[in-house]
Length: 446
Ligand code: BG6
Image (cartoon, rainbow, N blue to C red; front, side):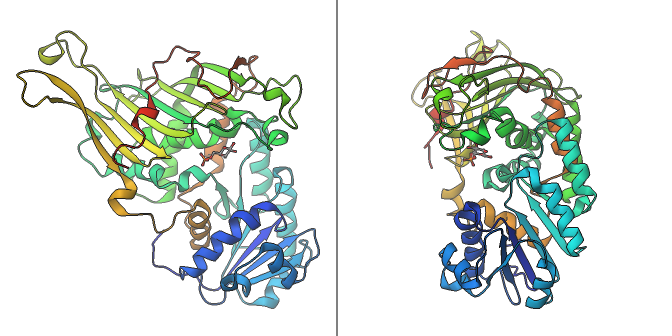
């Protein structure tokens, strides 16, 4: 997204606008964009929902600031919504955000088409996109009956994270790493996304999903694809997507384990005999020439005592020669810190000054915020809404990607009874993976 562009002549429609997301995230994001001068002349924001509001009541409900209040309007339901918009202005672009339960996505798309929302419309939907391969295919098929793929924007908020976007730049804008980015040099890849909180008030949704559907199928698969895909022929979203799809086609799960934190079954809206996993560890392989032989470990879960998302690249050991004659030299590592620290750390070996031969580990530590100051656009929704307004689908997920990700996980979903782990503590690796201590990298120069 270019930082200095301003969109004009656009309508932003929020379906389900009386809900929490509009008030907590979407309208504040639009407000920041307006204040930054990114939303310009002849733009409106129209909320729509089942409740009856006047424009003024709607603004009060949202606790809208003065800067955005004049752009906000409300229309109850989808019937007559298109005519209502026509009454507000002549819009080149209309984005329609589905802040709705996924089960009504397809019917809503049908209703929008019947209302006359056509080529200038882009619909934005949030995960979950289906529950498994079959339901995702069905959802994509039904959406495509009403809107072509290029008008469907599927959000994965991890793609809006600066540190995730930096993965492609690191890989394809540095000649240093490109030649070693393969199984000849890389011993293993570790993708970690742990949370300290439990399911909290989201039991009703989460108990029907589990962390594999909630995190692995989307966020972690996206990071994995960016990290391992071949170089795209251009930075065009379609070319990037093609390479991500090629990785997903070659990806398979070889081992996995599911866990559940103690006390999960007593959480609000969770079944007493629930076998939903709140923790998962997987070993995956990419069956292509670049990656054959390199395991990819993925770990995610809730109530693990720490919030942190990282990717670790562990390089192969050097031959047992010279400084490594005892075979105990630490191999190089690259750590992509996605959050809470955002940066990249490279572990390498140096000579201890003042000694003859002693060697030690050192870190090259790049801290994103220190190097460039806080990002101009910080919030994921600001970034994603702006991209949708500008018609840039780079950070959105295609039907093909989401279906392939479900396909990879087909035999893993709900597969075995989960083991129980203590709340607030990382369980020992059920697959015996030698995980990098990512917490030990936090802070650093950041
Ligand atoms: C969401 C999941 O997509 O991502 C949540 O539904 C999870 O369960 C969240 O907590 C994690 O996002 P982040 O950005 O806080 O890592």
